[in-house]
Image 1 (cartoon, rainbow, N blue to C red):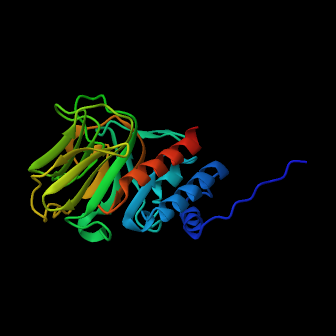
Image 2 (tube, rainbow, N blue to C red):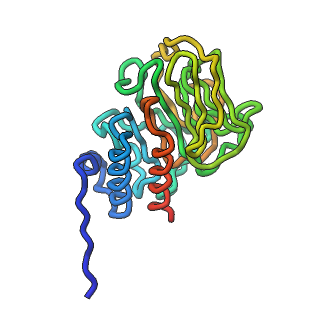
Image 3 (cartoon, helix red, strand yellow):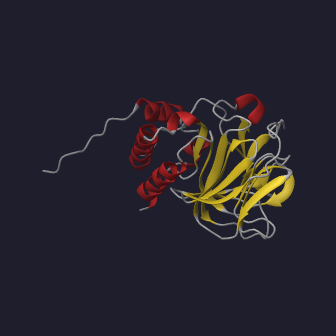
Length: 252
């Protein structure tokens, strides 16, 4: 007779599940549990302020951050297409997501000169220009296509670092001091910009939006699997590998 396999859930996975609208399905819960364990083993879990898994088994559960699950949930505005285990898609004009994360009030691991932020792109933006995650003042801009770049990371109004490719997977930016921005694509540091602006770059009071530049008309129609905000001290190679395994568990 086949035997049922039981796994021991870590306390963080249980806390996340308890804060979900409905108890997560086994496939999602197993994937989340293993992801949390991997991030903890690699020293990245405690360096994140938020991690939104947009590709859960239930749309409502995607609104709860894996880390700090009692924080403000994602708020959907307008029309958004949700695909089970894959993520969500919106055009930023008729639909977008407010993360509820505000740099001034919610940053713990994130600091002006030490932060990391990114998204997992399943289908890159094709709207001509668009922001996958950002704030209205230009303090944070993660995009899969913008202007002359096919993906771009901007850390403040005065400075942008771009990588001319159209990847899928994990696209993020890091900042570890007042003069250096790094663009990471799938665990590879593809570009460093050494002319970053002042350490007070995130002095804006606006929340971080997904699929929209917080009201400014640079809209994204990408499809995103996850989004996160954390410290610049995160191990980006290990984090990409853990995100890849999370994606594979849900879509493999």
